[in-house]
Image (cartoon, helix red, strand yellow):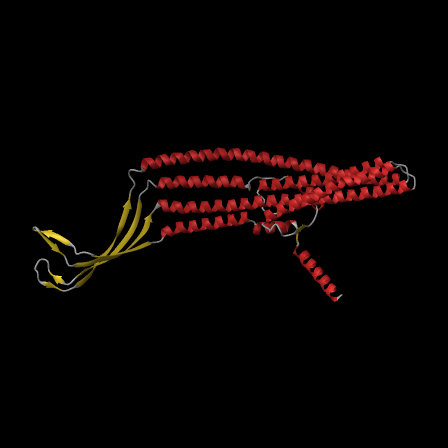
Length: 443
């Protein structure tokens, strides 16, 4: 008995641990997790970091550039020279030199324009990261609403199954008392059984919707989660959105990105123009060299000569260097014309994009208004269907109604609840799309 009790305690503890592992997630929490764990956001943040290093690299071009070089060469075979028909071997052992040079740009328009371009590149990287967050927010919202729609539909079907079960019990009871025909029992049981496949299908739909949501959030697909809330919690948003008509696309990320791309092309055009400008730089150089001779005879006098190493400074040079482009002017002019055409093309694309986004925003607004009206109608319809079912049930219990009347009332109630949930989901989805078009980043 002690052993059995110990096993039971272990099982209960294990079940408790499993229950604790289930994440209870609200909509704000789902968005927070997605924005911190999603690979899409991490990649966008890495791109900002990369562009930041590119910006720093461009600034490093303004600081003095120091270069050092050195060379050491040892003779494997003696050097020779020909003089008056004679070949003379030189006692040279090695040659060596070292130098240090420095340069500093004084007038470098191309470098300055490159630094300006990196600032625009950073703006584009930040805007693309913002676009990733907006897109992810939209995807998470719609995935969360899909889970809630599946859960609410599941609850509506369970409620309908309970009603059908209650009808079945009433029909069976009346049949046993001889107050109803066997057809009523069979019909009620068939209606109850017909709901079970739909319930199983919705259960699978809930799990699939949760899996997709976990992928968007960057959560392990094996991690169990529980979505908190229902679609009815967002009823007040229908009133709030109808009272607000101030919609703007000024923060639309696609338009902002194409504006930044236009700035990039303008910077590229200015950079190409700087290729026709002179560049002035200051420089300095210092060198040191040495040679070594092996012990031997002087090749000219024949006198003995000891081994020797001689090192000497080549002196320090400072000066200015001016580079003036001459032959590449016409090539740069052709490149400038190409860039101007690209700017014109981008302007046409921007106009077309703005018109397309205006249509998308109008469509989203229409979808919201349509879904809001459907939700209001479905809510009233559900209330009337509930009242109709209650009346039909009383009539059937008192022998004044038929089983078909009661089944129709039960079916109408289920359909009204499902239609209401679908209308709420359609409204929230359209609202999420509108917020994406407006460039909204937070709830």
